Image (cartoon, rainbow, N blue to C red; front, side, top):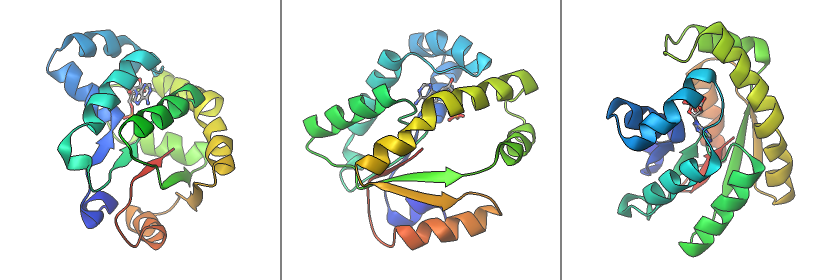
Length: 173
Ligand code: AMP
């Protein structure tokens, strides 16, 4: 069972929210599509507004799992400010550690439109440049949980369950 389901909180993936906008041909979708196709980050102000709207929804009251957000230090600072406004706190940041070779393997077998070799290479570059520094950011905040993301989805889920036995609001980076 996925962590969100087990904890009874919504799983909020910014990538999924963006793909939904693209599918529904919204103006946000039109603005995000080129970045997604290139494996680059959608500009922060667009991402922030979308996350803000989602976190304001009632179903996040008992907690939430953010997946793929924040992805930059600027987004992390924005998230802190947003949660403060909403009178909420982040209880944990989970870093699922996976080797580049395994990531390329996984991405190449998903069949998503933005999984071409060139886009995958770009996403990895973006990850190392922007996402990886968040490990330091959340480490300093005392929120970081680093777990081994290799192995089967069941193995990884079990490791995650060990960290979150009860309801929580956390982000994966
Ligand atoms: P994902 O499904 O997490 O791999 O995200 C797919 C694409 O959506 C990424 O390659 C980015 O173009 C965009 N995206 C998702 N989350 C973010 C974010 N937090 N900041 C900027 N762009 C994002």
